[in-house]
Length: 317
Image (spheres, rainbow, N blue to C red):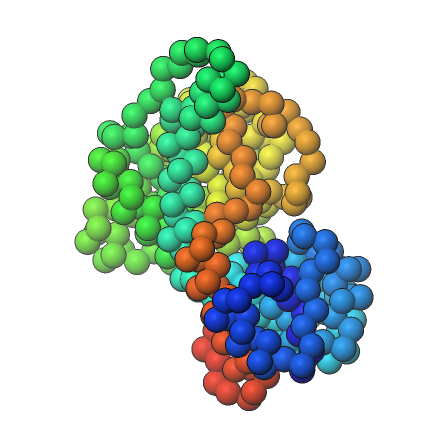
């Protein structure tokens, strides 16, 4: 068995249980030589002769998938699979799996960390203090504010619990809302429009689909509270970055926390220069615990498929 491994945090020199299991299963392992998500042409070259793939946030387009001559499984090292052409994989008979729940806590904690960073301008104050500038900034408290969550799945629910601990009022929209869960946990189950209009902080936890692409655009921003803060630890395409930049420059948006971008790595823009913008390099899932969970689950899924065993994590049956 020849396996391609592309996640940058799943390193070839790791002595983790997942890597030991993978090495004992595979005859040959090929690793990501670029240290970043791979494009379709790079994948087309690396997938030659591979029976399986542990996939990071690479761009598995139809071209890349159709070029694979032996591939039987794409095992996502994470939850989202918007960068995998599911139709092409299904057409080629390639199973696509993911690891739901493996990194939820890590992503939720970074989302809340971005919220705190923007409320108190922690990165800016840190930078200025280290530059011997005794800066003064009057921040805002989270307690008493309204947090709007778009997407009340595993991550959104954990963010909601954290917010309750900070005495925030939580409202949420989810197209598949579990109304009973929301009621039991003090979460207001409301419309998308109400979340947009009523929230002081908005945290995005939706998958990237046709109906969520540029969900946060000029029109939706115009309905937000003045000074609202937007956090995105989901997928970059949910936000129209040009629209948000214009709103930041106009003072309509009070802050922006980004861990996901339409283009990764992102091209340098005015966002890089703003004190009310905090940016991280798609690192929400990068904790020791989450990477271990994702590695174990993705390897188990890959082996199950290639061994002809039952795999409950297949997303394109």
